[in-house]
Length: 119
Image 1 (cartoon, rainbow, N blue to C red):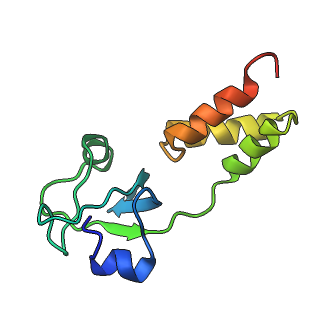
Image 2: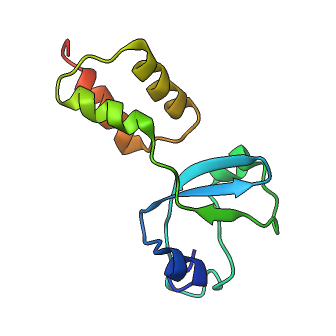
Image 3: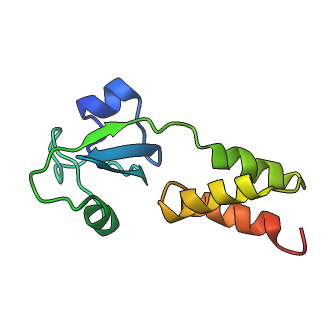
């Protein structure tokens, strides 16, 4: 998105923010990248190939952007960082968020690091 678009300004979206993108009944959480050139107009957004595929988007589709709801799985990941054991509910929640693409690569790497070495 253009960094000066009305959505970025009104919602407080900045580069590298996690945002929810919705198209019809499908939604994903993605990392926002911004441009400050004329590559995109103030009314346009572009999607990664992954986002295009996950949303089954077509050029010209209208997408909706919002702040994502806090992920419960992040609470469990932080708990594991501090050495706590995770129960089945916590692990299932983390796995579901990984599979659905709601966790960023950094969140996944943090979780994997927290469980490494017999932790």
